[in-house]
Amino acid sequence: MQQVGKGNIALIASASNQTRNRDVEFPFRQDSDFYYLTGFSEADSLAVFIPGREQGEYILFCREFDEKKALWEGAHAGLEGATEHFEADDSFPIDDMSDILPGMLENKSKVYYPMGRDGDLDHQILEWITHIRKQSRTGVVAPGELVSLEHILHEMRLFKSAAELKLMRKAADVSCIAHKRAMQQCKAGMYEYQVEAEIVHEFMQQGLRYVAYPSIVAGGKNTCVLHYVENKDKLKKGDLLLIDAGVECDHYAADITRTFPISGKFSSAQKQLYQLVLDAQHAAIEQIFPGNPWNKAHDASVEVLTKGLVKLGLLKGRVAKLIKDEKYKQFYMHRIGHWLGMDVHDVGDYKLDDEWRLLEPGMVLTIEPGLYIPENCQTVDAKWRGIGIRIEDDILVTKQGYDILTHALVKEIDEIERLMQAS
Ligand code: GLY
Ligand code: MN
Ligand code: MN
Image (cartoon, rainbow, N blue to C red; front, side, top):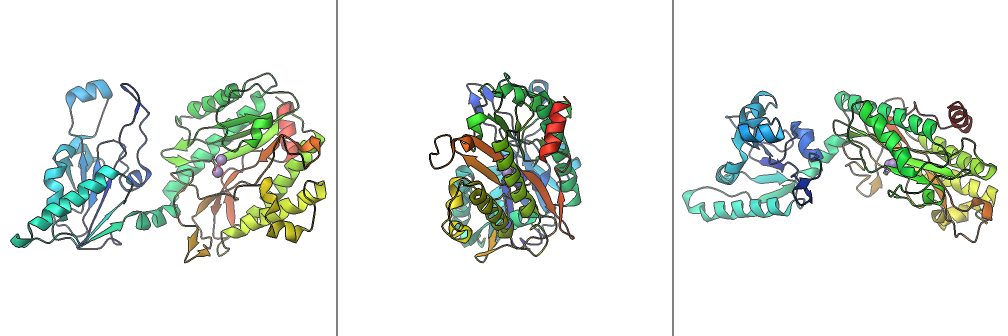
């Protein structure tokens, strides 16, 4: 409200229900920006913010309470609930939006809204403004500027409050428990989807119903497919299993990857590559502290991985030159991580004025180096082929440095082997 300023208006629409097939809908997930501002989890809603408006600055348009709807679909807040339980100053039926909103836009200079995200809303706003403009002879002034609301909002979302961190810690804790269960239950002969079931089972048993993104459960050569989500193959003795899975807690995500041997013991080649990725992850995490540019962690991982690949014979040449020529990219083709929050790939700029952004306390990010040696890679010894490894943790930047939100989950080689052999 402060940043939008008096004389201006901001508005944002909820997510809408999406059809899955015929009359079945996908589970509803509120728009993250909308939920961040309102805590309101219904579709067909629109929040309006008018700094300084005497009758109330925060207005929520939503569905009116409907007895019959409540019987079929369950509770919804209604207009009273919107003010009573969601702290809106004022509430109106969403069906009356087109009658009421144009009046709110009159005599405002700037309209802040998430531009270009919802074609219908974009169009609607322009129509309302055109309508106001036509009345200019009556003395009303139409807004002259449309401004992206995301710019303000996403900068706010990048810095997590204590309340947000509590949810993120819960999502991280539950995701750790689920990964541990997967390691304990995993056996050769199971199917990837059966391991996925163990993970989802634990999420739900712990009271969290929704995954933050589709779980990747990839055995053997599937470990080299970065976004493998088919999860349909049989697990083979001697192969690795890569699991990238995280749960959502009240709209906040965890994002964890672990890679472990299906039969509980790493082969010599697997062990060498795994230790290299782990060393790269440790080196990258050491680069997480306030004031350090965001890219330092990535650069640290590139250096460790390239040196290691030369040592193991997968790359040949001088390390500095291999890094300059980006030769590591054939085995490490993604970046070190991303912001994490309500969205798994969360909002927030990575660069400011073309410079990598400096880390600050309250930011949360993932650190997830990986190595993926394609099965058909003829330039490396056969023993390395078809091995994919990623290790991913969720890290909070603190005043002193960092706090690993997902620290509870084992990742050292001996820890993993011990856990798996004890189960
Ligand atoms: N799970 C998606 C990612 O790691 O970025
Ligand atoms: Mn992930
Ligand atoms: Mn990630």
